[in-house]
Image (tube, rainbow, N blue to C red; front, side):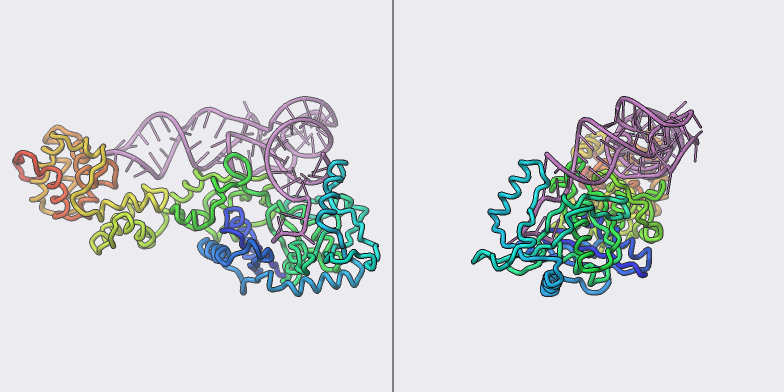
Length: 479
RNA sequence: GUCCCCGUCGUCUAGAGGCCCAGGACUCCGGCUUUUCAAGCCGGCAACACGGGUUCGAAUCCCGUCGGGGAUACCA
């Protein structure tokens, strides 16, 4: 039997983090077994479904690198088939027409709750003659659910879960206007699409009982269920907009890499021994339902960030340069010229180990492309007091005469000069860093100088020392 | 209210009766390294919700309590 899974989001918002993980698990499971993974858009709620949300789901999935087999199925388009099944159920005597009004139903619920009974419809139209139907009420179709015994599901994650049938009322399958409800649509679609494993959030666990009843009534084989625990916010409560209930694109915009997101998500609620960091190929190889935990997990930005830092270090320099380019240009307020671009590309290896997100990376790369004169931050300004500027003035004179403009030679000269002046290397490096980058933290400063080139380096130093007294030269004429 | 699920360091988790006075990762705190900041390496703090059982022996099994979550729609 080939495995068929599906991800079935309703397009009422973006692809949030919980949905993304559910999609990932389904995808991983299907790929692990060499099966199929389908995408189904549950757009039967016409009022809340939007085309924008559909696009957001497609985009989010694509960004994460989760591809689906075949075309996405739109559930609403299949409404006629769903209704057909409902009619068949009525014809078979497994379903019936119910003429209750919303008010009547509300009263029933209220009474049931007051009496401590399982809330719900009491089945009053189960065996009633439709001829006694009130005029002007469009009937709904309800499943004639078993009233005795219990419904049991074998869940691959939750184990065996059972519920007494008297807890379950006769669910509505077709609304008064003839449109199918979610409960009917999922079952029909999952059956028609040949879905063998339903992996979804455990908020659907109780739905599984009702859905099982429909499968049985139709005489269809019940698929395997795997209800995975939900993801909660850092406070343990349901994920809200404030924490992780953001769309996948929000994480992309925060500067996270899709591979980091995937690695983070797969480890949230699933584990493979002590393994923490592994590529998607390995996840496909290792993923199974047995490794899925039963308790809800919390979304932790810090861990995601640390994973992202790891993947940033592993990412190719060209790719990273491309990814941050739009952000760099936005900060610059102009297109990046060839010189700036090549400096950033050349400095990427040193830049990326210092950043945790693409935002930080873009930020830290900016000084390479900034126009002169640089704006200095407060700490940099403090480095460039009178003594600092005087020192730079003499250093600049030496740099102007440096025999070779490479990081190695530049550093050797600086070390020699520091020794001559009884300074530590930092005594020279820090003022240089301040003048050259506008900040007191940066990649190794001699690498920065090499990338900037002699002219730009001297010009940036000149910008900060220009009001200084004439430089004194040392005996060698080098720094 | 009723039903269902869950409960190991702050967080993600390993652990499927003795290998656990509980291991890894993130965070945090030290140290080494060091031109800054990172990275890297070394080290540290920190948990079996609670109470009863079962057993020679329980984080692991059973019951209860408490806590958290979910479901109770002509939403999905």
